[in-house]
Length: 406
Image (cartoon, one colour):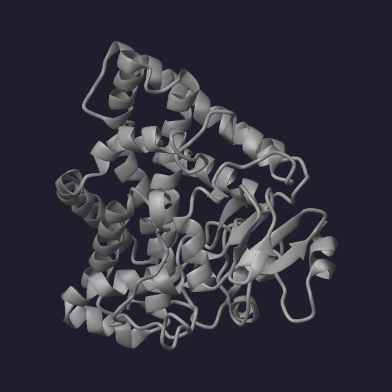
């Protein structure tokens, strides 16, 4: 299958999310896609590749024409089956998506996020304290992995000591993205799905008997009182919140620290003027965001960017390419923490705009700010060494990032 993908590409571009080298640095491969209208990739299944900012934004805004529901027969049936049959916010269209989003939106209001700030600062301080005592700093294991999963654990009302287990499950499940279309998912990934769902099934039973002030209890109450959620939807919801609530923010922190490590003047500027952090986070999201691409399916014959798309055709909507489109951003390959305006698409657009965006921004700012404040000589330990990424194209994140403290 991998060879089919490679030979199916035209002479002037290469797109293969299942190629480790492509995943390590996809950005040069986006440039040809940004130079013209959407292209097609035929690998037994024919997909459109949509990369330009205007085209990507138009697709994300038009949920009626470009559905988020994953249809059968496109090569991703195994992944869909592993997640379960019940719809999620990410994989549904209105009215289902509207109902599901409304149920969780009250726990992601600006006021609720502000209330979390002291707790996030406490978690970040404790993690940085531990790294300082060790005298070494591996950004992913010491900060980027634990902080977001601890925060989402607080929201879900599950114990912090389970965070490593959650992270292990999460990392395994994310690797499902790396399964070639039409190929079976490895057993260890299926087992991670099964164990995570089993854990939350038990938690849901517990909250029904002893509800608390947490999000799981609120969702259980919504399910019990008005059948707003089916039992399967409730379970899917909690699993999605855990995965989406920690993986993307983990990647924002890791990718952001790497960008700062490669741009020492930016790191120094933030240290001297902490108010620059707000713009820096936006540039981290644009420059090397946690989400490379999403997927949509055309509900009818249409045209996007001058390219005809037939009903039922799937499309890679390449957000990370759009965020480096020279038609939208001046010097898009430059990391510029003072970039203004910076209307990136890292959190999506339209009805699926990331509900956790304010929380992710806050966690990223606090985590990275705490590291810069505590470690005045922070730098990449091995600046010339290649960095390694986890096994997912769609969710781009480092597996390890060593930084020196002195």
